[in-house]
Image: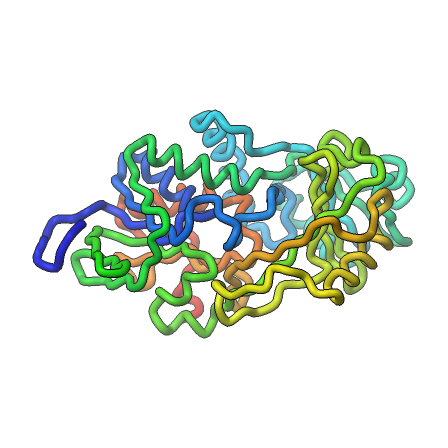
Length: 382
């Protein structure tokens, strides 16, 4: 621990927030022989931020934009590397369905991006989808697009595995250590937590919903912490909802959007998103219980769109994530050539490519270059 009069560095890089991106960045830095110190206000894998909820979706066919294609390709290999290094099973490639109107923007954009990225997909019309995936109740004009490379990630286990593997390679994770200030000092960055201070060469803010508190002012107006509700429903016949028979899915039908994953406990199936995210003023004060209206909306969506699930949730929870004003993450240096970087505001969609993105940021830190992801650059919002 460094004092004000001590010129030595406590580490090469500080990672503020050892969650989804922070844990992966710690791991990627450790693989490159970089001494990193991570600050985590709780502990890696905790359920107060964007990590909780058992599973996160992994997709290669991606409607959000072809610019993500290379990150997704690299992420597949990164996930397998992390599994090997940590001896932990994380990614289950059970396939993934995108369901919606063939003439609609969602399916049209997804098919176009898949063609551009060279991602193979299969398209099932309503009848073929019913024969293959009878759990879903498609409407006239709807299709199901199958991405065989898709699947789900065990999110808490992934973060814990990345942090633990980083520590095995010499990284330091300070658990239950909330950061109060991050100050760029020209030739170093100072991290303050309580009465203690640390000096590092570079620092990366990836504290999820808490990131905005530590960022310089120009970006705060473009960021919003949001409450994200999740829910689980019991299966009438659980064998119909195992990973072998029930791919992950995203469905956009009229004004309703839901997504889900197969059962990982043999009883319940995760289905969420009909109740959208909502802004919160303080990520430390989030109502995790669901109100009656929220439960009613989810029950109606499940009853109308999914066959074989009891349409009343057996479990609900809520988490937080940081959203940007344009839905695109903030990844890069806060000033050209500066020592403070940000990797946050993934707007509910960053888990799948987190290790690949962390690798790109780690390479930029090693070379002291700008992060080569121009479409995510913080400068676009400053």
